[in-house]
Image (cartoon, rainbow, N blue to C red):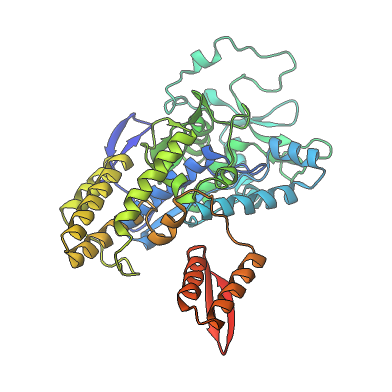
Length: 468
């Protein structure tokens, strides 16, 4: 039975979905003003793993996973101005890049991906409700603020007390809000900035209200899981709770999940510190599955230390697993869900707050058993165990590639993809070998191209090719 560490209660709890026929999870997605870095990759991969396992437990049609896109905020506006382009062109480019990075990492598309700019109706409606209930007010500068003094449980997620937060703060004379801790729901338009009509004048939403409006619109006022990076716990998620529960009058989320930071030299990886590595930069050196393994090799709540050595360790581990599968003729389809004792240990690890390091230890047990069986000539049983290994690995998004193809380049992107001209040159060399009746050489070239994702098709004396 699945247990999840709930950041709200600070303990592991038995997961009991509100409706087992519709398990609902919301994760704060990217603010799309730049390329995603490895810290973002951790969010994408961790909650993809959670999504995969929930689908395994409840059935794919019974799990709804929503991951939003923040496509309007101060950083986006500033970057668009710096680049001399519209904010829509900027965000369109980086949304496409985010999707490309996610696909490379084997991240399944979420069930829904709402964008802030397409959710203005829901955002404005929620702010109106907060105004009517007395939880929000319009400041002297035209902005609309949330009054945290009206929400007594404020701080329960982060463990912070309002008095402590307010200590050392002071309200400047020109400050437009009543309390330094009040946060903005609607920002009055500034000259030259994107804006939308509202009952409070032209403007745009604050960041926190966007997620409350999008999550409740897609999943209902009360849903199962809300996730995101640890850096969002305060103030973003704290503010989400305050405004959502004030607006709806009911509990917002049952289980809060937060993945740990990615660190470089003992500092959090972030764009503001300038110590980040983009996903696409890392994928220039390492196979995407190596990056995914590296992320899942640590428990999702633990800090993750980024280094080439850690990625090399992940690569070596995957080589070990793939080597055990290399000579097996495995079925293409995963087959029925396995439930033997080995699989049960794997499930037990994931049921314990998604303990991926323990689950991976089971995969290595299977790999050692497969090697033992093959050395003893028990090929049929080795194939059966290999199929189990691939199926369990699939719940983590691992071991779904061709073993031969992975081992060809060893998890290092040192064997670059061939361009069209290089492919044509290889085909010409194969044709010369065929004309000379050097069939072994011709087959070698064909097989080498296949390992690099290029499929040759011979038809009526003409060789055509396509990328796999």
